Length: 251
Ligand SMILES: [Zn+2]
Ligand SMILES: [Zn+2]
Image (cartoon, rainbow, N blue to C red; front, top):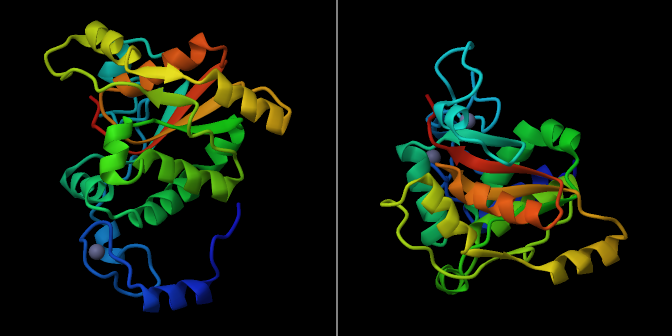
């Protein structure tokens, strides 16, 4: 694991550019931290018992899979997430995505790597692939939040990132009125795979891409991850995993 900045560098940067707390939105106290220590306690970490597939928290140790994973087959192998998607997380992620708070990614990446670096190293993904957003959205926001996360994780764990392996071609129809099958069908049409990006990578690193770790900010119904997994598998990727900052609650 690479250290990103020394403690001294962190202090100097924090004096020049006071950092905002991803949870309360105010200047972080004490300086040099990525979030105020009392604010961190407000987040709900995902601990055991959790679903063995998607990692949503479940009610008891006897429950192996959440209701969603029990009733639906997911093509991805396994997923990891840090916190429950509650009101605090919702505000934090909304500011990160829509209100220009890109710097919040430092906190998210730091926590994701601290918590999951052993699991990620065990999986040994060949590459990280961020869930793409439509180019009009990217133009509006100025960045794809999932790509920022993937780059941060990749840098710390020394795993290459292919940001253009998947592309979001069109905006999807509102998903709420659709059932699961229609949802997936609708989403599959929204993404495409770049063989060119894959070949470029394979030539550069002189190795095949077999395992992909998808990176996104939130996992709710899992339909986006599932659609991206489907496309990767159709294109001869053998195993797909995902990692996200937060996840909806399972039962
Ligand atoms: Zn705070
Ligand atoms: Zn699950």
